[in-house]
Length: 117
Image 1 (spheres, rainbow, N blue to C red):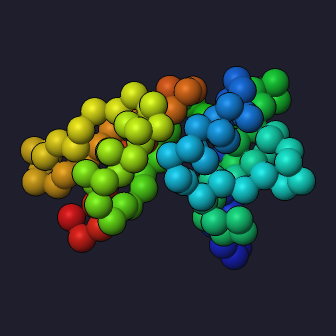
Image 2 (image 1 turned 90 degrees about the horizontal axis):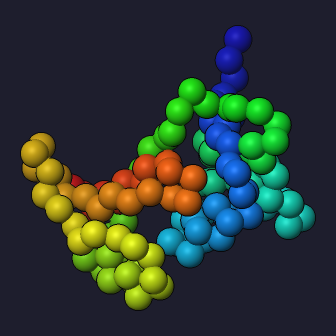
């Protein structure tokens, strides 16, 4: 029987650069003993994405979308822009939500949604 959800595995051509990117955008990241092959995006122990060096073979059938909730989309946009991250301003979607979208260095999608929206 399944006892808990552990993680989703993805590959990266440069795991340390991907770690640095997610750290720069303020995402929760965790590298055990400074090892970037198998670092975690999300909670250290539950429900995380585990990023592996692509040398181990393909883990996913394609790119993934990482979704993050933020308190203030406009402030998030301004902070990331100030860090030199190429990002477009928040937009209102067809379904009425407000979001920011970008890609990480490996081409995975990142979606920021404002809390309560």
